[in-house]
Amino acid sequence: MTKRILVVVTNVDHYDADPSHPTGLWLSELTHAWDIFEEHGFEQTIVSPAGGKSPLEPRSLKFPTYDKSAKAWHNDPERMALLETTKSPQDIDSADYDAIYFTGGHAVMFDFPGSEGLQRITREIFERGGVVGAVCHGYCGLRDTRLSNGDYLVAGRNLTGFSWREEVLARVDKLVPYNIEEEIQERGAHYSKALLPFVSNAVVDGTLVTGQNPGSAKETATKVAELL
Image 1 (cartoon, helix red, strand yellow):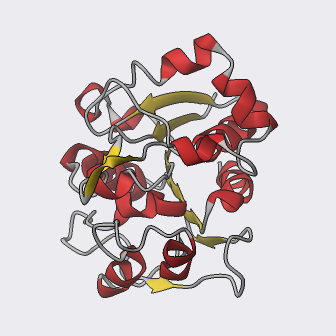
Image 2: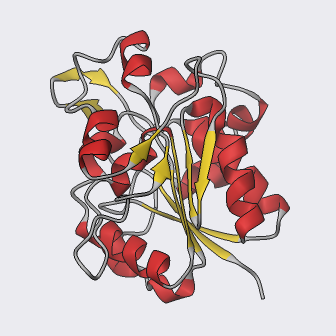
């Protein structure tokens, strides 16, 4: 039977601290995973906290992350149309999916954590033994998710995600609404990061798979595919 993956993207197009500063979906974090899942024959559905349009992070359309995979998607009207008509959480029956995969971009810091719909879907997939994946800032979508017993999903689990050092190097530490590396640990997660910033790093803990940064998207998606 074909495995089905729910791929999560953002609806946000600017930073709250500076509305003139654009942000959005980090395109390669979607496309690298999509390509790998497609190669495995998985069926993919794109969902966002509010449904509808997912804007692109302008910085993701530049060297070095604007690579062959990202360009192919960006230049394909059918693929781009998928980002205009994403489903919303209330359209989704979690029982239809074997995995949920959170993409990144700084925009997700604003709309992933507060989405009770995404939390519900994530909890249901995870408690059923499905795979929960997140790359880069995607782990913001796991920050407030609780299991049926009230515990945080991330409590006691090994994971990674975009580090505070990488925020500083990306020069957005003054714009981001919180320090996710710190907050995920406050919820009991065992956070780790690579010695060097921006190198590929993925962590697997049972059916939880997390990647540190844009360069980790392929490794993270490959590990999700292996579990499926």
